[in-house]
Length: 160
Image (cartoon, rainbow, N blue to C red; front, side, top):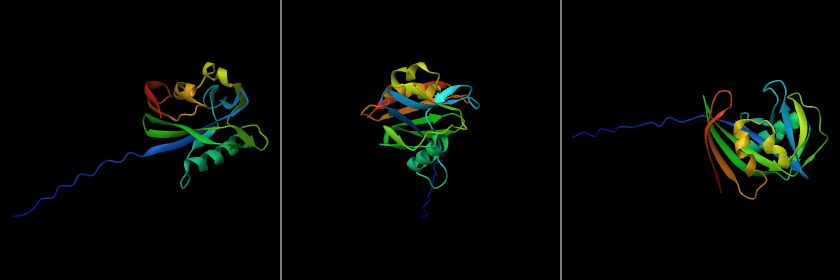
């Protein structure tokens, strides 16, 4: 009597990884106003993880490239998963200072925004959804379904 072995292989999802950091000094948060690529939308400095980088490696590299400075007192504030034409994960960090001298950014304009005004500025829908959970002692996890032009179709956010 023979034995038949059936094997099922799971389809693995490749996640696009990126990171961002909200640096708060006093009552102000450093934001990048994208004037070319995204039509005056605000977002924190950050970018895509490159081969061989950890999310924190990426954050330090991208932040330096976009601002000329290195954030200090960094902590992981949240993770934002999204589904669109691809699946992705954004590691959201906060920092309470920086080292170096701010420079002009080739991505847009760096601006200090009052923390209590963050919810009033034009941000990507996904970022605006988790803004209330920034600078807290709890870590958040967001799960978003978004369109190709970065509009949120559905969301859930939980705190740990």
